[in-house]
Length: 225
Image (cartoon, one colour):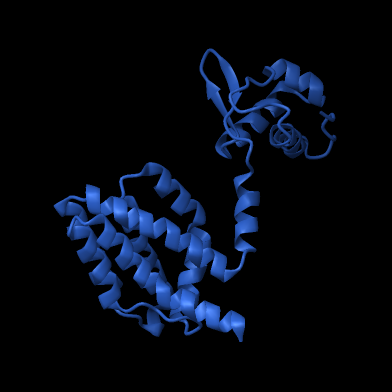
């Protein structure tokens, strides 16, 4: 680990510690050196180390355990990963969204409650049909519906992964409602809710897959032309 530069000490300390983590110098579950040791290694004050650790905890790299120390929680830079995801093609993003939503709908069919179904139907009422005059609001409400479908799966990891992809998925939704790709109509959205409400996981999965099929087909046509 390099001593921190004298300018912007906290930022340099953050970057140096983060580099050690992402380079697997410390692995997940390892306790990092204590505050005094890190201060000596970086050539900064303990207050600067404390601030750097606070930031890295907020970013998900570290976690502090009272009376025990600070431990590595993740070695993945989520912001960098998200940037790379945004650089992937629209086809890849749609396929990822399809995989997530198909399996989420399958699980939702097995785990839903009457309240969940009522909430999904209400979200569709609020979403309404596409209106160019309220484009951004429409996109937000459409995404809220799809998030709710994923949440209905009852799988917290699915929810977290979907949230991670949400920025890319929102770009996909924007593309589908601005004429670049076909936008599934209200009936197609209602069909997903009906399939989940049926309690048949295969029906829920196939209905959601069919929902995505026109978008994938159009993307294939555009890429081939």
